[in-house]
Amino acid sequence: MKRQTLFLLLFVIGCVSAAFISRPMAVDHGIWDRLLKKYVNEKGLVNYKGLKKEEGELRKYLDLLSKNPPTAKWSKNEQMAYWINVYNAYTVQLVLTHYPIKSIKDIGSKIQIPFVNTPWDIKFITIGNDKYDLNNIEHDILRKKFDEPRIHFALVCAARSCPRLRQEAYDADRLIAQLDDQGTDFLNNPAKNAITPGNASLSKYFDWYKADWTDRGKTVEAWVNQYSSNKINKDTKISYLDYNWDLNGQ
Image (tube, rainbow, N blue to C red; front, side, top):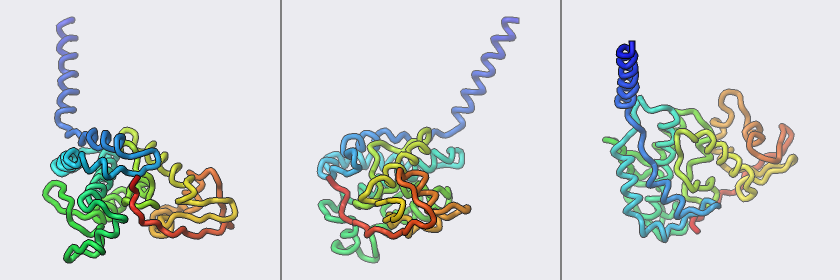
């Protein structure tokens, strides 16, 4: 009887071990997490000058991302966290490549790059065997595949009007809580969304991506009220703030 119990226990352990071995592990975002904690302040502003000195560490992380693209065996949250971190980390790398600059938009205008209109069209991202630009990551992958409007609270295009860059990497196990926290921070920052019951001056994000916020019958008002401490209603006058493209540097 004891021998049968032992065999059964070994069989169960073997099956569990095989399951873990057969399932590819998602990328470890530890390098990126450490850099964010060291070079990003509580307002989400980046010490690019300091980070420039550790650009080799950032490139090591980007190489890790490049060599470990998501697979179908990854969970949805693992894939989303991966692609959000890809967007943010490669955006920071793009700025560092051209640093010092006053705005990320200078990369596509004052600094001449042949056949490229904007910094978001530069094919400088290699994931697996494929080349991407930042627009591909945002629009063709994150928006198209995951149907999750809260990604707009997480993607940071290196501008002052963007959401804050978190002082930590996005992580599959905490992704939803992180996105909700980003939403709360973004909607209650008067420089990015100035909201009163009678007048809401919202981020351009709510205008540019209106189709995302109104998908599946939801409204912009509902998204605002989900995160803002000041609530609005259908009679609230809504306008949109000018977008500040100044670099999100310290």
